Image (cartoon, rainbow, N blue to C red; front, side):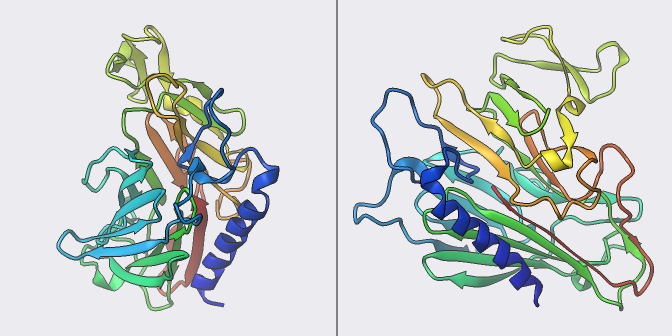
Length: 337
């Protein structure tokens, strides 16, 4: 079976489950999702609470902008603008609210990373293939082939990054399939992950499964952070203004076992002045995590979301160093964003 079939089967299985169980569940499998306001008119249990005037969802569109080097997936609820070269999600917009940091640098918005002394795996040299553009589903693949790389530090493997959107769905499915044939040289990579930097507004509440944080975390201009207090490491900062003035923050406080972190994200709890939206990473399965369910990891921190495929922050991660001619394949995802 091809890696594409392995990817699409769990995506469609998860989407089918979400649809048939929508009336029985208060929480849909959605990342960018509207949070209903108390006291307002009851709305149908559909993404965003609205459908088109004809009684159906808008069709999914796949639009390539050659001059900008981007491809856009849109379905009337969500719009994802993706850089073809780097496979970054540059902007992710729900109901007119753009939720990424908006940057275009290689480490901005939602980007791929993975580097250490043995090699680097970062999105580049992307080749776009539109796999499905049917109106009910838009599915694209951006191939990053080792044969197109020229640096000796680049990881000797191929990466196939899929982005899939369904009609009526309030988000996008993301999957990475990595592989190397028996003809590739020795090398490797580390910290293979998909990282998202979020907009400073409107998000002010961090929430995730497990024993991790589920707390108010102001990120507006009234809150400032100072690093390096009392010679502390850069991961520790002090809030010196705003609602949490005087509180210390450390990104490692947000860690939990990989087996518990099926949902992590940010939302807004200020219904009077900010939109009722949240952004979430939802894992239908965590089997692709190579370190096992009891390995701790960080998947959410200040205005940041992270999907890692092996333990990176606490050591004892799986080995991603390869001998010459060593074959290897690993599918990461799908997860819902």
